[in-house]
Length: 353
Image (tube, rainbow, N blue to C red):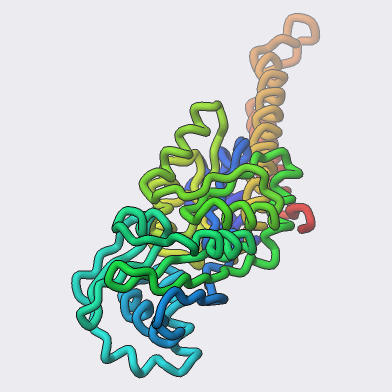
């Protein structure tokens, strides 16, 4: 009864819980891992800066980069394409055909456009492909310190530009994270972004512990590391690459505005997309578990007191036997008490944000 009412109460505050086990485990979470893009941030980055490195113009760089990224669903790719649309260059994209497209997990993408070999990604991608970025690393670091994500763009193995995008932090992320920390939960940020950008975002939202430049396949390993430390780990994410980590965590939380794969891998879905849903889910979980314990205590005490009377403990002294009718009524009253107490959960409200 308590679990049923608890699941319903969670749904009222925009939290969909798959099963009773997840509802109960959520109350025990000691560490919460948050993915950055699309979880702490809106997941809708915009191009903010273009630092040119050779004879190409901003329009040339954007068109080539957008054509390379046109087949990708990554938020950063969408930011490039959107920037081309904003500059009125979108119609020209049809003339740019992409061949030999490859996505290199945790590094970037490569492909051929109009006979040109294009590379677009982080410093590791450039180093791996032998592209010199001397003289531009400092510019990228400055952009990263402003909570922007700098990406290197190379044409025919020559650096053409640095394109920086910024993903706005959700309005309520800071207060939601503080709310989790106030409840004694260790909050950790996890991102594949570079360390400088991750550090800037973590500082803004008040997170002191973060993992940066984490490859998608390594996210689940970070969960396992915390679990080995004795933590009960919750993981919150929204993307396909978060799915293994969501499945590995003791409780996986998916952002409802994220991918279907993430939602399917998670135990709990936050329909509003707000991180306040995490604190709400944990608060409902704790209230539900508390209610379950109250019901168990009440039932055990009630039966422990009633069984001796039913067994005739009063008969030798007072000659009183418990009538089956009275016993049946008492048992019904016990069930009524449990049901009524479970229904008290309907009045529960998570603390104000």
